[in-house]
Amino acid sequence: MNVMPRAVRQPKLMIATRVFGAAGQPWMWRQVVGFQGFRKEIVYWERQNADTQPTPDVREHLIPGKLAPYHNDGRWLYRSRAIFNGSFYAAIGDERMRLRELFRRDRPDVMLCNFGDIAMRLLPTAGEAGIPVVAYFHGDFSFIANRWYRWSLYRCIDDFAAVVVVTHAERDWLIQHGMPADKIHYIPCGAPTDIFQPIPEKPDDLLRFVMVSRLSEEKGCDVSITAFARVAAKHPKARLSIFGDGVERDALKALVDKLGIRGRVTFHGFIDEARLAEQLPKHDVFIQHSRIKEGSPVSIIEAMACGLPVVATRIGGIADQVVPGETGFLLSPGDLDGMATSMQRLASDASLRRSMGGAARNRAVTHHDAATQTQKLGRLLMEVALAEKARPGVPA
Image 1 (cartoon, rainbow, N blue to C red):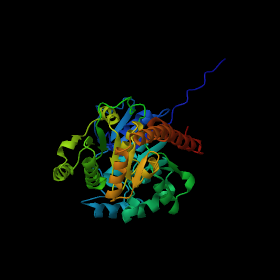
Image 2 (cartoon, rainbow, N blue to C red):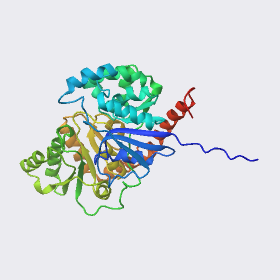
Image 3 (cartoon, helix red, strand yellow):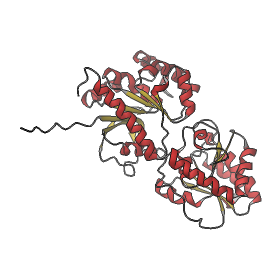
Image 4 (cartoon, rainbow, N blue to C red):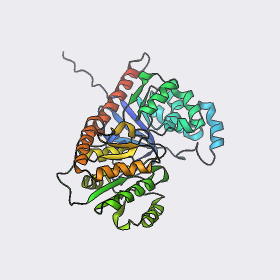
C-alpha cells in the first residue's frame, strides 16, 4: 500500500515591532509581505495605515500599553522593576503575562525583533518559551549614547540567536563589544528598484535638486537649503523640491524667505511611495545633510535607483550606500562649504550628473534592492528556525 508523505508544516515566523505600518517605514511592510516559506504573525503596540499597508496572509497581535515605557515619564520605576528580568528594557507586569500567553498559544519557530529595544523587551519572555530571537538593529546607535541601553545590551548579547545590522559601523561596534562575528549579518533594508526607476528624459530644462526627509533638526535640512541658495545664486534655472514634513517646516520656510529663494523652493509635504516614485526621477540631484545619526536611509537608495547622484554626509549607513566620486559626494556633518561646492560641481556638469546617476542606479540594483535584501533576511530566519526545530527535545 502506498502511503502519502505527511505534509511538512511551514515554520512560523513572528515579527515584532513597536509600530507597524508607519508611513516612514514602508521597508518593514515590504519585508513582512515579502517573506516566503513561513506562516507569518506580527506583534506590535500600534498599527497604522492598514489600508495602504495591508497584510492579508498575516495574523496580527496588538499588545496594549505604552510604546516605550522605559523612556520619558516613569522610566526610573520601569527600569528598577525590569532589571530583575534581565535588562532595563525587559517586559514587566501585565505586558509580560500577555506575552507569555501569546507565546504559549502561538509559539513561533523564530522571532524577528525590529530595533534593539524591542529585541531586549521580548528576549526574556521569548527565552522562557524557547523561542530563538533575531535582533534587527536599524542604525539607531543608542548603545553609544545611552548607558542604560548599552549596559542592557551587554546582558542580552549572548542570548540572541542572530543579529542583523544595516551599517558596517554597527557591526564593528558589536564585534568590539563581544558579539561573535558569525552571528552578525549585514542586511540593509533597500528600496524597490523595480518601482523607483529613471525616466528617458526630464520634463523641462530646469536644474532640479531634491530632498526627501523628515523635517527635523538632526536631518540638517537647514544646511541643505543654505547650500542650495549658494548654487541658485549662480544657476537661474536651479530649483529645490522638498518632500516630507516635520516640526522644522515653519522654521525652514522662514529660512527660505530669509535667503531670498522663495520662488525657487517648493515644500510638497509628505507623499506616498507611488507618487514619490513618479516624482523623484524628474529631478537631477539628491541632497541630504544628516547631522547626528543614520541607519541605512531608504530615501537615498530610492533616489539612486532613479538615477540621481547623491550629495550627503558621511554618517552611519550613508557611507555604505554612496561611493564618493562614483555615485555622488560625501562630506562631514556641518561642512556647508563642501556641500555647496559638491552641488555646484554637479550643477555645472550635465555629463557628470549622467555618469554618476547611471553608477548610482547600478549600485542600487546590485547592492540595495529591497526584494533581494528581503530574500537574504528570509534565508537567515529560515536557517534559525530550522536549526531550532533540529534541536533535541523540540517538537517537529
